[in-house]
Length: 235
Image (cartoon, rainbow, N blue to C red; front, side):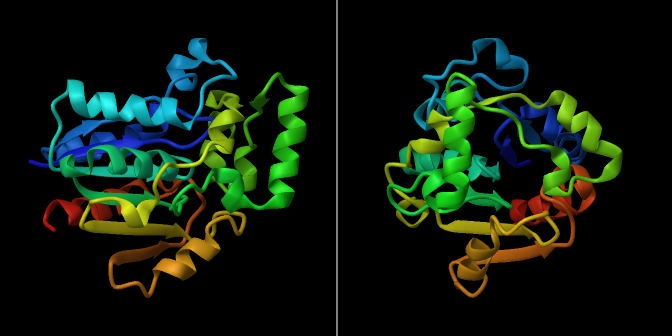
């Protein structure tokens, strides 16, 4: 039995991980799907002061209070920043870092540092108009499958801009975790992770996969994602 911790991306919540979590549990594994503060079913706690450190602490506390060790820690999209921060705090509890079409930051990098000036200016304007919050990005932009796109839009909520501005204290190369896997969604609707995929695909420290689907791999290809996660259970 392996322990999996699945961390969702921006604007969403643990609901987006439910299909894969169910498949992993049916295979006999323990699965934890924390929702980050201010999002999903914790949206009643949303506040402009919530930052990346808040979300890192959310996941660190799951490890602490559930007594999780030797875990496979998966982060989707913005969740890559979160799991990087977690790994640099409690890396001894993690077997594998699993980046799911996600940011894999260097020391001190934030989401806006990686995303670039044009995206940063857009987020700045949105935050100024919405009390420090970024409205959810439509699912169609991320090429989410047609059957799920409207549901994803209905479930998504605003993200505190501070979570995008604050950088990790230490990057993925500093994390004391031996196993690293990256899964790239090759039809995700944009070029947000093309550079990351190109940087890691020939790095011998990483296992890298490409899946031909939209950004929300856990919705578009849940069986394929489950299979990739289960590979890590035997690593």
